[in-house]
Image 1 (cartoon, helix red, strand yellow):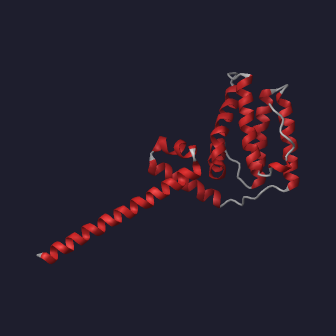
Image 2 (cartoon, one colour):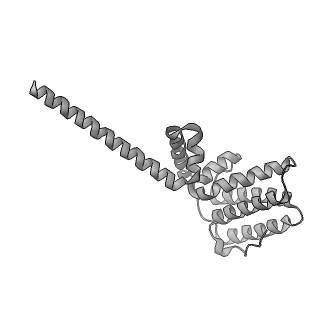
Image 3 (tube, one colour):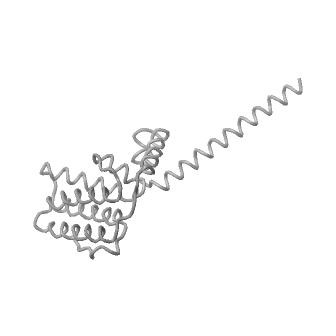
Length: 185
């Protein structure tokens, strides 16, 4: 009887230890994802729950790891920098057109870096893996571009969208020192 109780106690202790180890692994995984994705973690997890949201973030990481991502050459960065400067200059006379150009140009930079360019949500999800701190701004800029297409945005809204696009553009280009000096919008 004592042997049976000791064996049962050992099983309970082992089960509790396994549970503690499992929780620590989950907490470590959660903390890693929260640190890596920042506000994107909340954006992804809150609507669907922790388990599904974290699985989605892990799928994004796996997807992006399979890409052949590479920095731009100096010549590419310089060319895109010149196009960006022209896009910003266009803002003065045609804010809506400049916003459309900024979104298109960002897609071209992503493609040149090795990202597949799909629909907006897929682009944002892909960018969130390595540029998480800018994805919320990317979504905000895109939302303003959509509002503009419906005639619902002000020039100030478009100016803010342009600022958001500029920050992400500079980060994705990844070679800001080769870009022409940004002008204020």
